Length: 383
Ligand code: FEO
Image 1: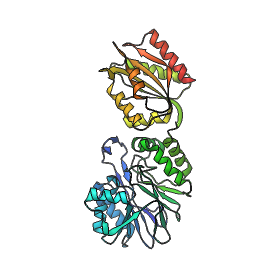
Image 2 (image 1 turned 90 degrees about the horizontal axis):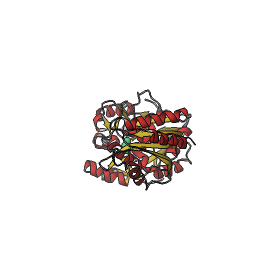
Image 3 (image 1 turned 120 degrees about the horizontal axis):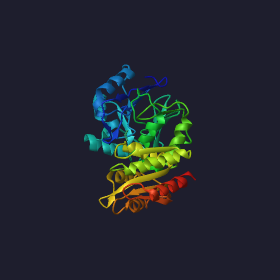
Image 4 (image 1 turned 30 degrees about the horizontal axis):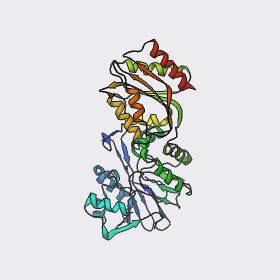
């Protein structure tokens, strides 16, 4: 696939995968992107997942059309992109490998060799001259591993952004970019907002006409929108006004309270998203918690703690630096409700969390008192 006169797409679509990175459901598959720049010297940009080596080599050879590659540029060493480095090195013994020092150390770990006689070691600001194209490298540590580099080609105004600006879903999936890019971002890179902001700052000096990420579509229009979303997400700013209600329920009473709150909020014109954490995709729930500016946690007391799915959800938020949101709580307990106290303790290290004054305490099932608290919570969340 031709991207520009000299940049070709040689990646693959994966529709066989069950869980990406061993945990994320990807109903529309995944793409592992790889590119070739054809110039006086030819550069191959990253490889693909181990299961697609043959298909990738076929794509590569078709793009090379008889030429030999001069460089393999390694932006990221996670195996979904690096698995075929040794295969490439064997197939093209004269090609050099361009990567950061940390990436070469990881090659030794993965392949038993760091290709010492073929290394081009990249640092921030390194340039790789290909002819008309010169790749300039930008260190992007922790976006998403410590060895990551991005590169920029001024000739075609193209940023090779590694995992950044990627999304779940194969390239032939017909779906909204932001939904699966947001779930991907908060799942995979969400913890590293400060590092993403540092790279975005460096990118402001670049004239970017196209982003070529390692997953998902090539972005060539409205680049400002994508950079704007990444700025919001990595700054932990809410993207939308609204309330996300995350609940767990054993016999349906807590679920009923969550739904009643949703009705009360919607009746007041508030945008609401609601998820049963035991039956929903956890990454989708994490995404919604970061997307909206208000969160309600509704859960039972369980084994002197909170219900397991709520515990997992809160861990997923705190490990990703969840902050700067308003949080309301609905707790349920038949003999000793303590969920509210445990939730507040769990979030005590999270920055700028404002708990609502109202805590809804249900003893087994809603009654007049807890329904009045629910009404008060709805009013508080509408202000
Ligand atoms: Fe797509 Fe961090 O690998």
